[in-house]
Image (cartoon, rainbow, N blue to C red; front, side):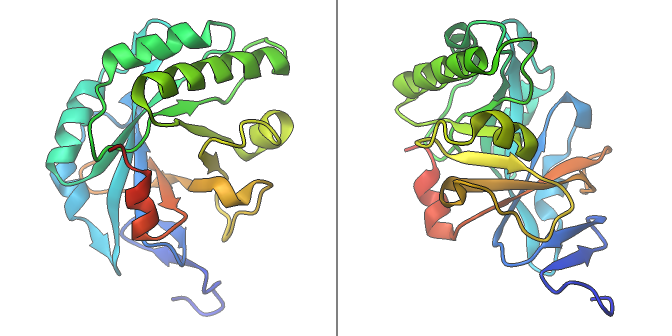
Amino acid sequence: MDAGENPHYRTYKSFGIRIPSGYKKHGIDVSYAQGKIDWKKVAAMEEDSVRISFAFIKATEGLLKVDPYFKRNWREAPKAGIVCGAYHFLRPAKSGAWQARFFLQNVKMESGDLPAVVDIERLDGTAPAAMRKELMAFLKTVSAKTGVKPIIYTGISFYNDYLSGYFDDYPLWIAHYYQPSLQIDGNGRLNFWQHSDIGKVNGIAHVVDFDVFKGDSTTFQNLLVR
């Protein structure tokens, strides 16, 4: 550790980023932007007990787009021993229920997977109330079909502006970069924190988002699909 460095936020040279301390479960989230991934190399990488144990993988977007690398990532990452979850990029100008059905047509979740994730980052010209209506439609449709509540992913500003005080029954995953800690309203249901978007991992040719799970191993296991 460098002299004067925050002991709760230390630099990991092999990953090329600073990582908040005090977390046992570390992961990444990927899409076509990372290209073809060697998941065995990802799983084998470790520095000072930090290793990638889970991954969120982009599956779908809107009503028509399937991530071109989804099927490969969804197949290969679990083979390497990484716990996986799939996410959908919501377009709030389109039907949330239809988007949920499209997502479920392309993603077959199994026991031991992370819950589905809905990524909501923009209004796409809709009013906030209209966005929340389609988001809720997506959440309810996926919950009804899978029996598991999806995780909501968003950035901290979007959360504070449009989502805070809503959807309190759903797990939360917040993006807020380059900070030693994360404090938001509703912190008790915050399960995942995306703390960097410039991480480096063996087996991935491009920078990648880094995440931590806010809880112990038992809490993590209890979150998984049964």
